[in-house]
Structures are given as C-alpha cells and as structure tokens.
Image (cartoon, rainbow, N blue to C red):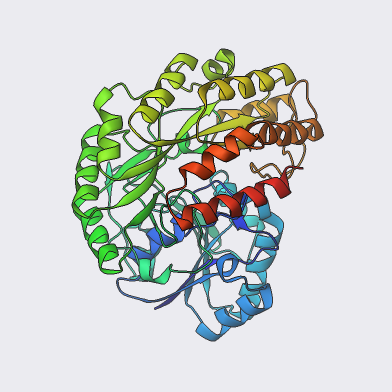
Length: 454
C-alpha cells in the first residue's frame, strides 16, 4: 500500500498537531506529533511518503501535484481549528484529484461529533480518534479487529472504540522522514533537533485543556530506547519532548530519564510545577533536560480552582523556584481570556510573573477546544466570537464576561511587551546565551515576537 502523511499548505506558519492548532507566535515549527507517531505504525507494511507543506513552504497546487504523482491508497492528513475552512477545502481537492484515496484526518475539530463531520464532508473517509491508535494500519492490512477510528461503512458510519491498554506501541517512528530544514525550536541547544514522545495525553483534568479529555497512556519503554538509539545513529541528540506532562507517572519518567542519560540527550520538557518530589528537578537536570515549560495559566486563585488546575498559586511559585535552583531554564505558560478574566486580573498575572522572574513566558489566548469544560461554559454563556480559533493571539475566539475580543488581543500584546521588552531582561538573556546558535535563536525569536506585538 502507498500511504501519504500530509500537513496541508497554509498561508501562515500554522501548527496543527496534538489537537492544539495555532499560528506560530514567532518562528518556531516542529515535526507534527500526529504524523510522526503514525509513521511508525504505517511504515511497517507500506510505502510511506511525508509531505509537510508548511515546513516545505509549498502552495496548494504543488502539494496536490505531489500527492497526485504518488497516488496513495490511504492518506492521513492534519486539520486544525485555526485553518478549518482552508483545510477542508484542500482535502476536497485531493479527493477530486485522487478519488480512490481513502482520506483520514486527525485534529481537534474532529474529536467531537466525528460521525457528523463525515456525514457533512463526503470527501473524508475516516477520522483517527487518537494519533497513537492503530486503526488505520489495521484497516490497511485488512484486519477485522480495529481500534480508535470512525469510518464510512456502506451507507452508514461506524465507530471503533479506543484501546484501554495503559501502554501503547507505534514501532520506531520514521524520524528520518521528518528532517525538514525549516523545523526550528528556539529553546533547543542545537539547530538540529527531533520531536519525541514517551507518553500520550495527560492524567490531570484541567478544564481549559484538551489533554484532559484524551486519556493517558505510556509508551512501551523498549520502544523509547530503540528510537533514541536510532536518533543517536542520525547524530540527533537534541529533543523537543512533546509529552504534555512529563513526570505524570514517576516510575516511567525515571526509566526514560535513565535512557536520556545513557544516550546523552539534551532536551526541553513540559512539566507540572507542583512536583512534590524534591529530587525530581535535580534528576531532570542530570538526565540532560535544560529547559522546562511549566503551566502557570493565571495568578487568580479563583480561576485555578474553577478549572481544576490541581495546584495553587503558592505551589506554582515553589515549582518555578525549585526548577531554577536545579539549574533549569523556566518557561511559564499563561492563558488570557478565560470567561472569568478581567483586566485587573490579567494585570495581576503580569505582576506575578515579574515577581517569579521565569526565563521566558508563553502567552496564549483562551480557546474553547473540543472535549473541554471551557468549551461547555463558552457555549452555555454565548461567549464565542468566531468558529476558527488561534491561541497564539492573532485574533480572539471568544470574549470574557467583561472584555471584548479586541481588548483581549490588546492586553495579550501588552503583556508580551511588559515582560520581554525590558533592557535589563534583554541584557540578561544575551549574557546567558551559551553558543552562537542560542544567540541567533534569541535574536531571531525576539524580532519575530516584536513584530507580532507592537
């Protein structure tokens, strides 16, 4: 079988993977986790091609031509709420050009009402419910036992349930097919890096986050080692660890960190700030981690409680301090525009961040993603302002009870300027740059952030 993995074209630098589509807030871009993980499953008995039209910077005509030349029997494509209309239009064109191709999609708009999406879009043949599910590979092999897909079946639609296994296996992913020069990660220590996963989803239940509705599964540890060994052969030891909550399962995380030490990896990881084990931060550093991304979200105790963040403001502050004391660079993520947000509350979060002094802050506008309590609240209160969504802040998908979409975008831009455009902060970052690449990344990202927030 010929199978194509496709990240479709976009006029902007769009990121569609892991059910969190957005435009890049600066110039970062990385291998889509959905396609990467499926490459391990789908390459085992098939001829595989990867087309990342965003990374390759090709237009719809060029992308369609390449698909037509390859003539796949199956395709797995990405779709995002940030680019929904153009994505659906593109796949309709694919169906016209290659009508025999079975088109499956992965993306957050399809996580809810998957059957209805297929009924309303005749060019689509199926939905992959989780990107670690084996369903497409099983269908391609003609198997009867199928998991984690919704497909057309005769005149109707059939849903195959998700696996309940706490572990998953995809085989070794085809990292060599995802070595596009335009992939760029500003927190990396080296220019060349690989996107890497050791688990899927998240066991915590934050009400604003799609991960809470995905379930949580660990990757088979032997498979983690096999892929690290292959990456070492590729001479790629810098990793962007796309696990959404590294350390959620301590035993698994410690096995993974032992492998990172063995293969001398250098990496960035998403970690919860309320790690209770005081040794964990030091173990992270010793295993090669240099940067942690911690979810602060808001300085408001009310918001942290309402959305089941699971940690308090003081625990977040303690986590930032412990990570810094362990020698880790700290990136905090912040959400602006939850229904309860006020201008005063957003300014309090800005003030809190100045006190914490993380190395970087990632400001995101709230978006009512599928499977979230936030989505239910936004729909119930009529706060949605448009169907497309972009957490990066180019526009606001909703309004709060007291702030308009325009005010939210303005406050987000002010927050970015308030944190980043301080002479003392800029000088500190330049002094701490450890290599020519890090200096280049700082300047490149700094100019991009400036351009998007003035």
